[in-house]
Amino acid sequence: MQDTRWRKVVQVVIAVVAISVAALSAPPLLARTAPDPAEPETDFLEFEAVRIGGAFEYPWSIAFLPDHSLLLTERPGRLNHVRQDGTVREIAGLPPMLTSGLAGLLDVAVDPGFARNRLIYFAYVSGSEERSGVRVMRARLSRDGTRLIAKTVIFESSAAERTEQYGGRLALTGDGYLFLTLGDRWKADHAQRLDDTLGTVVRIRTDGSVPSDNPFRDHDGARPEIWSYGHRVSQGLAFDERRGNLYAVEHGPMGGDELNLILPGRNYGWPVITHGIGYDGKPVGEGKAKDGMEQPFHVLGEPPAPAPSGLAVDGSGPSPVFWIGTLAGQALLRLDRHEERWRETRFLHEQLGRIRDVRMGPDGLLYLITDDAEGALYRLDPVVEQAGGKRGRL
Image (cartoon, rainbow, N blue to C red; front, side, top):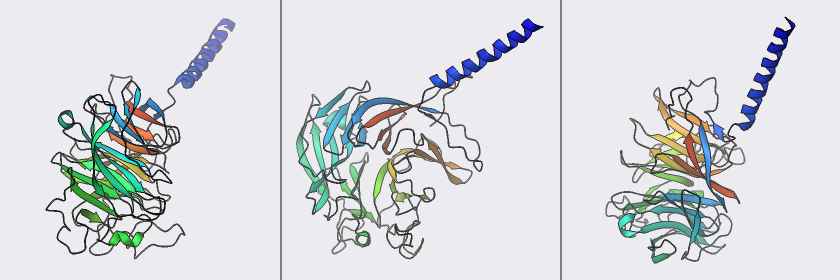
């Protein structure tokens, strides 16, 4: 009897030690959907965040080349070529740019015909601390991938005084159009004007010309590049090729961060309407709705605002799935259609830090970068379930 009791004690001790060792050796960067008693159970699996490269100084954007390597921008003015094994090589030939405040090198995009023409596009800030704007440059990546050649500025925004609220996200379409988000630069009333590009989404062709069907091309006094207006500052932009829809995520003031379906000629309301409140705690504008102004496709969460930056759209299913990076929220948001409503699911909350950009790679996996003086590039691998070897869906 005494031996039996000791055997049981030893078995319990062994079990406790095994559980403790397993907990200590578990990968530290796994995340499930945030538990919420009001939400139904989901079938999403965990992610393992695999660090590919870094440290990068305030990385801002990533874009994939045909060989699955990446271009990665650093806001202080560096463009890098990053391979999947983490090898990093800086690319020479960037133009002079302003790197004060939140100015610098912003988004980068790869031409759909890159394998043939080797063209890339990038947005950057030009000017001085007293007055600056966003430029878009088209350039050719040299055959050896070390430098930019044949550089041409194909767009320049209106200028403003403060080195903040630039926007600067790019999206390309397969039929030769380029879209760019531009912030209001703390001149909120300008977002309701058409004579400058503050607080707008613009549309040009990839050669810099203005399409003949742009909505304000023939309006006297209007900037012909404007596609939509009434935006505060949109730091995520993505095109759903399957449905032909363009989406942007936009910062509200306090609360009221938005996902918008961007349609030609539409007024998205800022600062006349918003679902947020001012930084002083007081209402902004005339309320949440007004005739002739668009409502958000979806309002993200509740105050305090998550501050969305970076957007990827998976259009392969019956309805699109959106992946949104957040700065203040320090999480990756998944937005999907569930029982006639849009459901938000949070991943990696406060595990990686501020997420600046998120993209879906050609391998079907998500990639993201963190906004930090020592930021990093990560790939998100769905964790394989032990039972049946089933993988999670994105």
